[in-house]
Image (cartoon, rainbow, N blue to C red; front, side):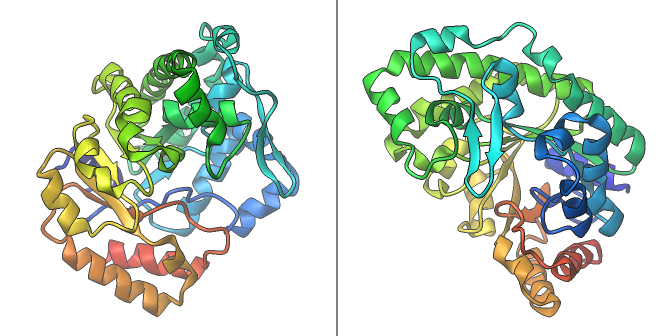
Length: 340
């Protein structure tokens, strides 16, 4: 069974000879070869060059026997194509060139031609597919409508999401118009990635932890559901959200093929709750990969034993890999899964 066959079977909740493994944000600052590239090129240059994006995507696969290549990109390429660009400020994270504050701002956002503007992403995915052949799966991704809207309204990352929550409560029609517009674009973007040959896509709801529990369905999940319905099975969809474990029952009804769970979940309990409505991905604490290899091996083996009888389980972290992750720890995790 090839890595690609293993991953595709797991995405469809089928039995596999061993759990497939990929690691969220597996290309990045913990790899010296990536840091070397970043000394010569900006992040956006790497993202928007299909050749360099392919090179970065393949870096982890040259070190570790992972089952999937994750397209090197960013969720903010979608707002940029719609007319709201972004940049990384030194030491201050992401900042957007402007903010969306009114219905006029929402109406001014581009829709026509947006998918075509993102052709550099699909070009990278075609190069990745050509490079890995039929052995490895290729995965794409997007932010959810709520998460993209949060960046566009807040003007960057946020701790409390005060501005977008104010909009949601004081001008709900403006936020609804923005989320509707984004849901259509995101769905089309995922379908275009499927056409480029990816085997699965992941929707990141990174900003959802800022939503009050009683508004989670209204402000995020209903738009995620719209996206999944429009994608219509063109490609399996993984839904990831952190810090919303108390809403697993709602997430189970989204129609996602797989739910990617953070490290606060007890996976066997989550599997019982889902009762076959979605596969499970996760959920090792990213801090684990900052520990000695022997500790990593012990923890991973324990987690694998707990999920031994579960079909469609994909091994992953419960969030993105940390910049100071140890390479020998990553190697220990991947080798433990491969040899399980």
